[in-house]
Amino acid sequence: MDDAPDLRFALRYRRTSLIDKTLLKESSARRKSFSAALHQFEEQMEAARVVTSATRPINLYYGLVQAGLAITAAHAPGTWSFSKHGLKVVEMRPNLPDITIRPDGDGAFQFVARATGSERLAGPVSFGALWASLPDLCQFPLKGATAPIALELISERYAEGAENGAGHFRAEIIVNGDLPEQADRASWFRATMADYPDMSNARLWDDSGTAFREARKGRFLADIGLPVPHGKPAQDISEQEIEAFFDRLAPRYRFEHERYLRPPIGPEQTPPPSPLMTWWLLLYTFSMVSRYQPLKWAEILDLDKSSDAAVVQHALEIALAVLPHLVLEALDKEQILFPRPLRL
Image (cartoon, rainbow, N blue to C red; front, side, top):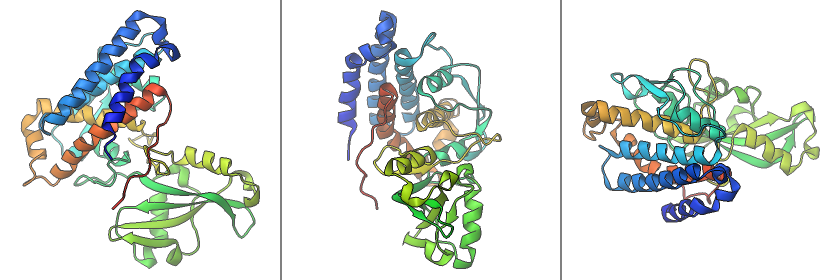
């Protein structure tokens, strides 16, 4: 499904429709900057479509920065403009997953994160951890990456009682990987859930022989249960309570019924920034490497020599569709979910 034309129309329509609903009504400076910034975002996205991966990160990142200015003009109280990135790549020489990004003062990243209610960076974080935490990219691992990945979760619309009568929320997690041997499944589950603090009380539903099933080679599901707070019986739990529970645990992302558990990042193991701000960090890094280390960037993109080339180029293609969607959500301060796409 190519939703780009509809999103482009929606973003153009916001140039007038948001004025009376946001802080844009406070001043002409906000309104003029908002309009000009969205215009530049659209043009940078169009430019990114027609160039190759050699320069695409530059268009994508600076387009996103302009979208960020539109977001802060509409929603940030007080000072809403910025003149710094607010980020720094610590060292560009390591392999891509090991490149580290850290906060640097108060700049564009921090302004937009505040305006959108996103987590910010508490300290340095690896590019690999950011990549793995993003639902759009977790299926496409970088070579040598070891960080926990975002896990898709399918929630049930009912609760079920356990042996002690207490209610449990039911769900399945979807894992891109080889199905563990039956003898290893319980230990695999415990070790994996340790990477997701909110899943500390999750358990396999039934025994390890029946809780797992293979969807296809390289992809399997595990049936799990999570205890209802305060031991509430299953029959007393409404669908609204179930929905609210899973909205906190694994928010829906971009598509109806698609939920993701996202792992913490960085040495402090803090929650990751929102998907919009995680894309911001990734594209900032790509733009810095492509501009200041063009030979390294060319080597990363070399399909005949680099094992990361295909997934990096694919990520830049994905960004063309994802960024307008996330920017529109940030402007509206409301989630927009599409029908579930066809899955292979």
